[in-house]
Image (cartoon, rainbow, N blue to C red):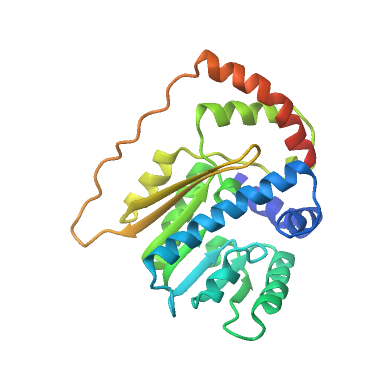
Amino acid sequence: MATIDDKTIVQNYFNAEGFDRWRRIYGGGEVNKVQLDIREGHQQTVDTVLGWFRADNNLEGRTICDAGCGVGSLSIPLAQMGAKVSGSDISAKMVGEAEDRAKQALGEANLPQFSVQDLEQLSGQYDTVVCLDVLIHYPQEKAAEMIKHLSSLATNRVILSFAPKTVAYTLLKKVGDFFPGPSKATRAYLHREQDVVAALQAAGWQVERTGMTKTSFYFSRILEAKRLPEGVTAPASTMESQSSATLAWAIFVLIAGLAALAFWSAL
């Protein structure tokens, strides 16, 4: 029940005031310092993923599902690199913006196919499924279901990004929760990396590459997983468990509260 509420809230938000706010953040126009920091952080995440594709040097003609494509920040450069891209988003306004930006960047050549869909509605088979900065809208139990579903659509690779649930980020978020701001229009869920890895492994995938984006107001963990050969079991995760917060972290979080005030008020 709560998950349905979350989805409706997200859909309404990104079709209303959230659309204009995030269109500016994901654009090239003037924004405030906090929004600029988020823009740069998100672009770093996109650039990391694009760098992985370039390093593999086999993107031409590959089918890519960009789940939660937003304004096309990843879909468009992937299409420019020769991929056959299907992008989707829960927000009709975001999809419309992505289509406009794609036409401006590509003309009529190899345009991505955009559609208005939530993650549960996605179907088909793709070489790679990418889902960037979307799991923040899902609680962990629903995120695990979404990871399983998205994994079923990929034949070769799954790439996910999420806001990592660490001691520092959890405390920083709690500090931010004390302050009012438009960002409260949607819930933000942090996820433990070991939970995301476990969901991938349960679906038959093994993490091959990782990345991390950290700016002042944006943080995103990026995982690339490949399908395990039939009969092969993924090794147990060796990630260290989260330790208790140290005094240094506590001091850091208290200081960061001032920054959090600006963050939660500016979005």
